[in-house]
Length: 220
Image: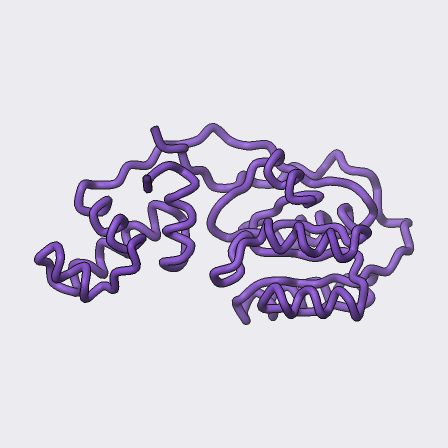
């Protein structure tokens, strides 16, 4: 049976300690493969008086190089950085710089607190959260606290037989044109099925779809 999918719930950060008097200035590293994410986080965090410097990395190699050079206090790491695994990047960052606190982030997907802690992360936030709550979570993690929001009750998702066939072929490395030929469908129809898969799996591309499907038991 496949694991049900959920969206990250709205944060509940009202009961956290008052951070207004702490003067610590933080260096923050953003690890994500989307330019708009870098721009948004840099603008948002740049407005915080407690942020000393905001750094950007688009690959694991860049993240490790910046960590060696600048020793960030907090690293925001996407669950999927291109074809790279965010939790694995987290493990390597922590191995290189144990004092760097990692906050896993995602706009499509979730990681359990146990899995996040096992990777060395101090928390998880959704990109859907309000900017003020994300900023507060960054500061909390930078001050040695953890941020793991409560899970909501999951809702199940089901793939149609055709979507499952498309997913299986996608996992084998077949292109949309090859999938169309194998299933005797038009390329446009295959594109519609892949879009439906991305929506149901809450992912953005093929690599994420296959990775997510493997984790929730949709692929053997």
